[in-house]
Length: 276
Image 1 (cartoon, rainbow, N blue to C red):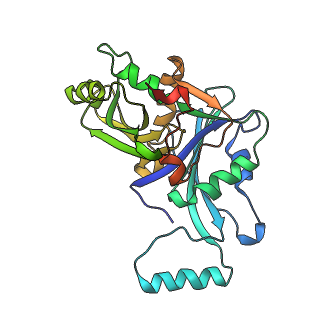
Image 2 (tube, helix red, strand yellow; image 1 turned 90 degrees about the vertical axis):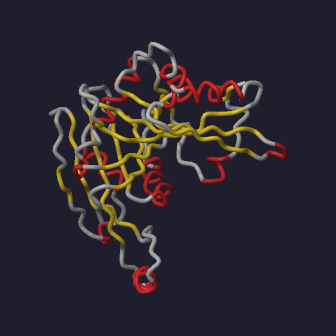
């Protein structure tokens, strides 16, 4: 199943043993009896970046539908043990050592299973790469930010409330971190205990045209708007390269995928992502 334009959930990671798409696909394979995986190459502008769409088989249905007939069809298929097929993205950027790997899935509900399969089969050199969200906000909100081409169009905070509850504030705009609204909100929250939970970003080309639209949370989960049958996805490698040069990327082994309840809980013990 593939849709030309839609949000894909994604992770970025590296490993000394994952130097090719074939090596990544091996992590995704389960039982050969489920079916033969199909692979469609995705053209890239850089010869050091390789990409493809590949079939992922699962016995679970992650497709949501309000059509009673479709619901029954999916339920019957699951009862009969017929696997569901999903098209996922795999990209490998060999410009860094070890190479960076980007994997993307079409349904958020697949995250625990799909990303969990990769996590369970990782080696000792395996690391997730995530933007340092608080430091990035500080850099992009500076009057003379050197991270040109990146525009924050959405920013979400969690604020600690009474009885362990959390409230949320979201700002949206063409360049949130350079806006008067951002200044007013941050001043209003002085003295409160809050975390920056999620950023929505636009990455533009030299002419100011949008190359990539994506979001990421404080754990390192990406949500990317896919266009051109995935040809826009390698631009995320360019973004990560820019952030790495500014030391705005963290590398860690902790599994980044969280439940909804974990995502909205207030991590007062996480001093790196907490503002006082």
